[in-house]
Length: 353
View 1 (spheres, rainbow, N blue to C red):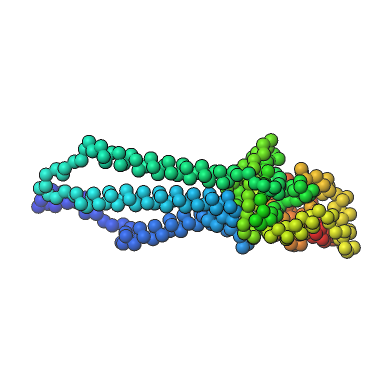
View 2 (view 1 turned 60 degrees about the horizontal axis):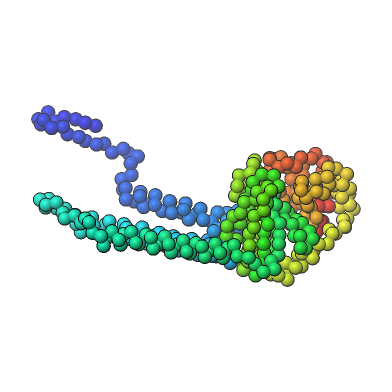
């Protein structure tokens, strides 16, 4: 608000502080800074399902650790350069600040030594990081001796895994052995997808008609989740990945289980479910892995619908009769089985182990 003093010729300006304005701006800035830091660090590790996370800060493969170490080196060097520049600017502002009545401060110009220093330092940093990057690329792309080869195929909206050396294929979960070279041959069946499990280290596109390769040696047992990192359609967000890394003896036991046919239905209810499965259109799609996931040993899997539901009898019943409500973009048609038929189907599929 502007007013004029009747006894003075100059204008007097008064400012009314808004009641919404913080009375302690420094405290407000500190709170804002803390919130921003939480958001930044929260982006490094986000929840994905129960007991799992997408984190880039805990690599579990040899190649992933190489990438992580380079990331840390770049961040540390960048921080040091930032603090050095800010420190020099603050020192110059304080040390050479002018005072009232002082003549114009001296200027430094045409200093060849100073110019060479300022040019040489960035060049040396960039050359050093370039050499480090080349070494990281060599580590990531290095060929492995006698790896286990697994074909990874992205579909709308699920992942197919083929083990050609072991003679079977599966879906939903990728099993790999620990401390054993693994080569993933990644491609797409329909549109471009992207295979990304952050703890493995990096992402790789799944492109129809093209095969990309990831060479991995995972050194830690556990379950590591990921997701499709390339927008691929309606249910892109529900195209999740689960990698189960286990000791070699456990992996071999799992392979032997997968090589065997599923156990025959053990109860009358399950046998009824098998008849329903084979007499409806279920077998037409799920009998062809190029169209729908292979359901052999389905009962041993942890997920339904590529991560949209945990594999429980209740969730499986929801999925069969209400797939469009659970995962609206899924290409599987919704069925309208009676409760007794649904119970039989669930008993049959959950018994596929």
